[in-house]
Length: 292
Figure 1 (cartoon, rainbow, N blue to C red):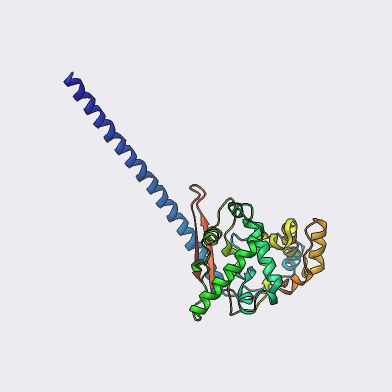
Figure 2 (cartoon, helix red, strand yellow):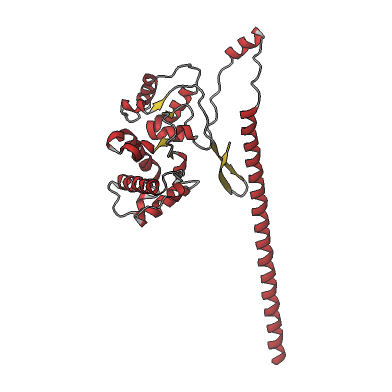
Protein backbone atom coordinates (compact mmCIF):
# COMPACT_ATOMS: atom_id res chain seq x y z
CA UNK A 1 0.00 0.00 0.00
CA UNK A 2 2.89 2.32 0.81
CA UNK A 3 4.53 1.49 -2.49
CA UNK A 4 1.33 2.36 -4.36
CA UNK A 5 1.16 5.74 -2.61
CA UNK A 6 4.77 6.47 -3.57
CA UNK A 7 4.04 5.58 -7.22
CA UNK A 8 1.01 7.88 -7.29
CA UNK A 9 3.04 10.66 -5.68
CA UNK A 10 5.78 10.28 -8.29
CA UNK A 11 3.22 10.25 -11.11
CA UNK A 12 1.60 13.37 -9.66
CA UNK A 13 4.94 15.19 -9.49
CA UNK A 14 5.81 14.11 -13.02
CA UNK A 15 2.41 15.30 -14.28
CA UNK A 16 2.84 18.66 -12.54
CA UNK A 17 6.36 19.04 -13.95
CA UNK A 18 5.13 18.16 -17.45
CA UNK A 19 2.27 20.68 -17.17
CA UNK A 20 4.69 23.37 -15.96
CA UNK A 21 7.03 22.69 -18.89
CA UNK A 22 4.13 22.73 -21.35
CA UNK A 23 2.81 26.03 -19.92
CA UNK A 24 6.31 27.50 -20.09
CA UNK A 25 6.71 26.47 -23.74
CA UNK A 26 3.29 27.89 -24.61
CA UNK A 27 4.19 31.21 -23.00
CA UNK A 28 7.52 31.32 -24.84
CA UNK A 29 5.70 30.61 -28.12
CA UNK A 30 3.24 33.45 -27.48
CA UNK A 31 6.02 35.87 -26.57
CA UNK A 32 7.98 34.88 -29.65
CA UNK A 33 4.91 35.33 -31.87
CA UNK A 34 4.19 38.74 -30.32
CA UNK A 35 7.81 39.83 -30.73
CA UNK A 36 7.86 38.84 -34.41
CA UNK A 37 4.55 40.62 -34.96
CA UNK A 38 5.80 43.82 -33.30
CA UNK A 39 9.04 43.68 -35.30
CA UNK A 40 7.07 43.42 -38.56
CA UNK A 41 4.86 46.36 -37.55
CA UNK A 42 7.84 48.56 -36.66
CA UNK A 43 9.46 47.64 -39.96
CA UNK A 44 6.31 48.70 -41.81
CA UNK A 45 6.25 51.95 -39.82
CA UNK A 46 9.86 52.67 -40.70
CA UNK A 47 9.15 52.00 -44.38
CA UNK A 48 6.11 54.29 -44.32
CA UNK A 49 8.10 57.01 -42.54
CA UNK A 50 11.00 56.81 -45.01
CA UNK A 51 8.54 56.91 -47.93
CA UNK A 52 6.91 60.05 -46.55
CA UNK A 53 10.28 61.75 -46.02
CA UNK A 54 11.35 60.77 -49.53
CA UNK A 55 8.21 62.28 -51.04
CA UNK A 56 8.91 65.49 -49.18
CA UNK A 57 12.54 65.85 -50.20
CA UNK A 58 12.65 64.40 -53.72
CA UNK A 59 13.08 66.68 -56.71
CA UNK A 60 10.06 67.71 -58.74
CA UNK A 61 9.29 65.35 -61.58
CA UNK A 62 9.87 66.63 -65.10
CA UNK A 63 6.74 67.42 -67.08
CA UNK A 64 6.35 65.18 -70.11
CA UNK A 65 6.60 67.10 -73.37
CA UNK A 66 4.80 64.57 -75.51
CA UNK A 67 1.36 65.79 -76.64
CA UNK A 68 0.29 62.19 -77.11
CA UNK A 69 0.90 61.44 -73.43
CA UNK A 70 -1.03 64.52 -72.39
CA UNK A 71 -4.04 63.41 -74.42
CA UNK A 72 -3.87 59.95 -72.87
CA UNK A 73 -3.76 61.45 -69.39
CA UNK A 74 -6.81 63.57 -70.13
CA UNK A 75 -8.76 60.61 -71.45
CA UNK A 76 -7.89 58.43 -68.48
CA UNK A 77 -10.62 58.38 -65.87
CA UNK A 78 -9.53 59.64 -62.49
CA UNK A 79 -9.62 56.95 -59.82
CA UNK A 80 -11.04 57.70 -56.41
CA UNK A 81 -8.14 57.50 -53.94
CA UNK A 82 -8.25 55.04 -51.08
CA UNK A 83 -9.01 56.92 -47.85
CA UNK A 84 -6.18 57.32 -45.39
CA UNK A 85 -6.18 55.13 -42.29
CA UNK A 86 -5.93 58.24 -40.12
CA UNK A 87 -7.76 61.49 -40.63
CA UNK A 88 -4.96 64.08 -41.25
CA UNK A 89 -4.43 67.06 -38.96
CA UNK A 90 -5.53 69.59 -41.57
CA UNK A 91 -8.99 67.95 -41.56
CA UNK A 92 -9.55 67.99 -37.80
CA UNK A 93 -11.72 70.31 -35.72
CA UNK A 94 -9.54 72.88 -33.96
CA UNK A 95 -10.51 73.50 -30.33
CA UNK A 96 -8.46 76.69 -30.08
CA UNK A 97 -11.27 79.16 -31.00
CA UNK A 98 -13.45 77.67 -28.24
CA UNK A 99 -10.62 78.04 -25.74
CA UNK A 100 -9.98 81.64 -26.73
CA UNK A 101 -13.37 83.22 -27.36
CA UNK A 102 -15.75 80.67 -25.87
CA UNK A 103 -18.87 78.81 -26.91
CA UNK A 104 -21.02 81.85 -27.70
CA UNK A 105 -18.67 83.08 -30.43
CA UNK A 106 -18.17 79.60 -31.91
CA UNK A 107 -21.57 77.96 -31.59
CA UNK A 108 -21.28 76.09 -34.90
CA UNK A 109 -17.93 74.55 -33.96
CA UNK A 110 -19.33 73.61 -30.56
CA UNK A 111 -22.32 71.86 -32.12
CA UNK A 112 -20.12 69.96 -34.59
CA UNK A 113 -18.05 68.65 -31.68
CA UNK A 114 -21.24 67.59 -29.91
CA UNK A 115 -22.37 65.79 -33.06
CA UNK A 116 -18.99 64.03 -33.21
CA UNK A 117 -19.45 62.72 -29.67
CA UNK A 118 -23.02 61.60 -30.33
CA UNK A 119 -22.17 59.80 -33.55
CA UNK A 120 -19.10 57.87 -32.40
CA UNK A 121 -19.61 57.32 -28.68
CA UNK A 122 -23.30 57.49 -27.79
CA UNK A 123 -24.15 53.84 -28.51
CA UNK A 124 -20.89 52.36 -27.26
CA UNK A 125 -19.84 54.53 -24.28
CA UNK A 126 -22.75 56.77 -23.23
CA UNK A 127 -24.84 53.68 -22.46
CA UNK A 128 -22.82 53.15 -19.25
CA UNK A 129 -24.28 56.34 -17.77
CA UNK A 130 -27.66 56.24 -16.08
CA UNK A 131 -28.38 59.86 -17.05
CA UNK A 132 -27.45 60.38 -20.72
CA UNK A 133 -29.43 63.61 -21.19
CA UNK A 134 -27.07 66.26 -22.55
CA UNK A 135 -24.06 64.12 -21.68
CA UNK A 136 -22.14 65.26 -24.77
CA UNK A 137 -22.52 68.92 -23.73
CA UNK A 138 -21.60 68.16 -20.12
CA UNK A 139 -18.48 66.35 -21.29
CA UNK A 140 -17.56 69.16 -23.72
CA UNK A 141 -17.88 71.87 -21.06
CA UNK A 142 -15.80 69.89 -18.55
CA UNK A 143 -13.22 68.96 -21.16
CA UNK A 144 -12.75 72.51 -22.47
CA UNK A 145 -12.55 73.88 -18.91
CA UNK A 146 -9.84 71.32 -18.08
CA UNK A 147 -7.84 72.27 -21.18
CA UNK A 148 -8.09 75.96 -20.22
CA UNK A 149 -6.79 75.12 -16.75
CA UNK A 150 -3.86 73.24 -18.27
CA UNK A 151 -3.10 76.21 -20.52
CA UNK A 152 -3.17 78.67 -17.62
CA UNK A 153 -0.77 76.50 -15.62
CA UNK A 154 1.61 75.90 -18.56
CA UNK A 155 1.05 78.74 -21.06
CA UNK A 156 4.23 78.08 -23.04
CA UNK A 157 3.80 74.31 -23.40
CA UNK A 158 1.80 72.75 -26.25
CA UNK A 159 -1.49 71.15 -25.28
CA UNK A 160 -1.23 67.36 -25.16
CA UNK A 161 -4.79 66.05 -25.14
CA UNK A 162 -3.73 62.67 -23.79
CA UNK A 163 -2.51 64.31 -20.57
CA UNK A 164 -5.60 66.40 -19.83
CA UNK A 165 -7.12 65.49 -16.44
CA UNK A 166 -10.86 66.08 -16.04
CA UNK A 167 -12.25 67.15 -12.68
CA UNK A 168 -15.13 64.66 -12.94
CA UNK A 169 -13.74 61.14 -12.43
CA UNK A 170 -16.62 59.41 -14.24
CA UNK A 171 -16.07 61.65 -17.26
CA UNK A 172 -12.31 61.02 -16.98
CA UNK A 173 -12.89 57.31 -17.57
CA UNK A 174 -15.16 58.17 -20.51
CA UNK A 175 -12.42 60.44 -21.90
CA UNK A 176 -9.82 57.69 -21.50
CA UNK A 177 -11.90 55.30 -23.59
CA UNK A 178 -12.47 57.99 -26.23
CA UNK A 179 -8.72 58.57 -26.51
CA UNK A 180 -7.93 54.86 -26.64
CA UNK A 181 -10.59 53.97 -29.20
CA UNK A 182 -11.72 50.49 -30.19
CA UNK A 183 -10.94 48.75 -33.47
CA UNK A 184 -14.42 47.37 -33.98
CA UNK A 185 -16.69 49.71 -31.99
CA UNK A 186 -15.51 53.34 -32.12
CA UNK A 187 -12.53 55.42 -33.35
CA UNK A 188 -10.09 57.37 -31.23
CA UNK A 189 -10.99 60.99 -30.54
CA UNK A 190 -7.44 62.07 -31.45
CA UNK A 191 -8.19 61.53 -35.15
CA UNK A 192 -10.82 64.25 -35.26
CA UNK A 193 -9.75 67.08 -32.94
CA UNK A 194 -6.66 69.17 -32.28
CA UNK A 195 -5.51 72.25 -30.38
CA UNK A 196 -3.50 74.44 -32.74
CA UNK A 197 -2.99 78.11 -31.90
CA UNK A 198 -0.46 78.73 -34.67
CA UNK A 199 -2.74 78.26 -37.65
CA UNK A 200 -6.13 79.75 -38.43
CA UNK A 201 -6.73 77.62 -41.51
CA UNK A 202 -10.21 76.24 -42.07
CA UNK A 203 -10.90 72.52 -41.91
CA UNK A 204 -9.69 70.96 -45.18
CA UNK A 205 -12.57 68.92 -46.58
CA UNK A 206 -10.46 67.61 -49.49
CA UNK A 207 -8.17 65.63 -47.17
CA UNK A 208 -10.89 64.49 -44.75
CA UNK A 209 -11.66 60.76 -44.58
CA UNK A 210 -15.22 59.46 -45.12
CA UNK A 211 -15.40 58.80 -41.37
CA UNK A 212 -14.72 62.48 -40.68
CA UNK A 213 -17.17 63.55 -43.38
CA UNK A 214 -19.89 61.43 -41.79
CA UNK A 215 -19.95 63.87 -38.86
CA UNK A 216 -21.09 66.62 -41.21
CA UNK A 217 -23.00 64.78 -43.95
CA UNK A 218 -24.25 61.55 -42.36
CA UNK A 219 -25.20 58.85 -44.89
CA UNK A 220 -24.06 61.07 -47.77
CA UNK A 221 -20.43 61.08 -46.55
CA UNK A 222 -19.11 58.50 -49.05
CA UNK A 223 -20.87 60.22 -51.97
CA UNK A 224 -19.43 63.59 -50.91
CA UNK A 225 -15.95 62.02 -50.67
CA UNK A 226 -16.25 60.66 -54.20
CA UNK A 227 -17.53 64.03 -55.48
CA UNK A 228 -14.62 65.90 -53.91
CA UNK A 229 -12.07 63.49 -55.38
CA UNK A 230 -13.81 63.08 -58.73
CA UNK A 231 -13.05 64.63 -62.10
CA UNK A 232 -14.64 68.02 -61.38
CA UNK A 233 -12.06 70.72 -60.92
CA UNK A 234 -14.23 72.90 -58.70
CA UNK A 235 -16.51 71.56 -56.01
CA UNK A 236 -19.09 74.00 -54.67
CA UNK A 237 -21.35 74.13 -51.65
CA UNK A 238 -24.37 73.77 -53.95
CA UNK A 239 -23.01 70.45 -55.28
CA UNK A 240 -22.61 69.09 -51.77
CA UNK A 241 -26.08 70.25 -50.75
CA UNK A 242 -27.54 68.48 -53.79
CA UNK A 243 -25.74 65.25 -52.88
CA UNK A 244 -27.12 65.44 -49.35
CA UNK A 245 -30.64 65.91 -50.71
CA UNK A 246 -30.27 62.91 -53.02
CA UNK A 247 -29.17 60.71 -50.10
CA UNK A 248 -31.80 62.18 -47.79
CA UNK A 249 -29.13 63.25 -45.34
CA UNK A 250 -30.00 65.62 -42.53
CA UNK A 251 -29.96 69.29 -43.46
CA UNK A 252 -26.99 71.22 -42.15
CA UNK A 253 -26.48 74.88 -41.39
CA UNK A 254 -25.10 76.75 -44.42
CA UNK A 255 -22.80 78.60 -42.04
CA UNK A 256 -20.91 75.32 -41.89
CA UNK A 257 -19.03 76.37 -45.02
CA UNK A 258 -17.54 79.26 -43.03
CA UNK A 259 -15.37 76.87 -41.01
CA UNK A 260 -14.34 74.53 -43.86
CA UNK A 261 -12.65 74.96 -47.22
CA UNK A 262 -13.42 73.10 -50.46
CA UNK A 263 -10.21 74.20 -52.18
CA UNK A 264 -7.90 71.56 -53.63
CA UNK A 265 -4.70 73.59 -53.35
CA UNK A 266 -1.78 72.16 -51.42
CA UNK A 267 -1.10 73.66 -48.02
CA UNK A 268 1.74 73.43 -45.56
CA UNK A 269 1.89 70.04 -43.91
CA UNK A 270 2.09 69.63 -40.17
CA UNK A 271 5.48 69.26 -38.49
CA UNK A 272 4.33 65.85 -37.23
CA UNK A 273 2.59 62.87 -38.77
CA UNK A 274 0.77 59.92 -37.24
CA UNK A 275 1.49 56.42 -38.51
CA UNK A 276 -0.78 53.41 -37.97
CA UNK A 277 0.25 49.87 -38.88
CA UNK A 278 -1.33 46.50 -38.10
CA UNK A 279 -0.27 42.88 -38.33
CA UNK A 280 -3.14 41.03 -40.07
CA UNK A 281 -2.16 37.71 -38.49
CA UNK A 282 -2.16 38.68 -34.82
CA UNK A 283 -4.39 41.79 -35.17
CA UNK A 284 -1.80 43.74 -33.16
CA UNK A 285 -1.58 47.40 -34.17
CA UNK A 286 0.61 50.35 -33.23
CA UNK A 287 0.02 54.04 -33.59
CA UNK A 288 2.90 56.51 -33.35
CA UNK A 289 3.32 60.25 -33.88
CA UNK A 290 6.60 61.18 -35.55
CA UNK A 291 8.32 64.37 -36.72
CA UNK A 292 8.45 64.97 -40.45
